[in-house]
Length: 68
Image 1 (tube, one colour):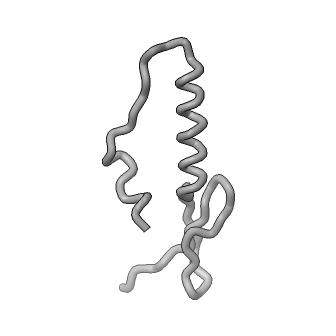
Image 2 (cartoon, helix red, strand yellow):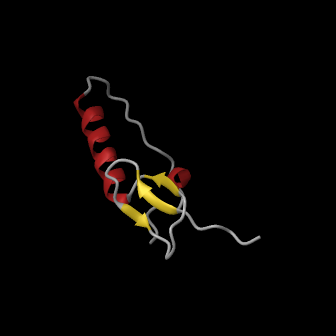
Image 3 (cartoon, helix red, strand yellow):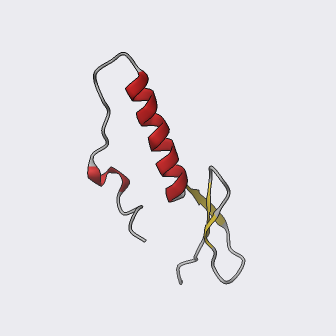
């Protein structure tokens, strides 16, 4: 049985990330621009907090999301 391609939609902004040629089931992700915005907001909140500790995700955590 062949793999079925899903339509991929950003769960935050509803932007279509990947639209197959035919109507297919939908799955959700976060698009690169929404991810960048979320991480920027998170960094601002961390900077504004009184704690001197910072939270950094390991480089492999997001996998290949930025490779397009």
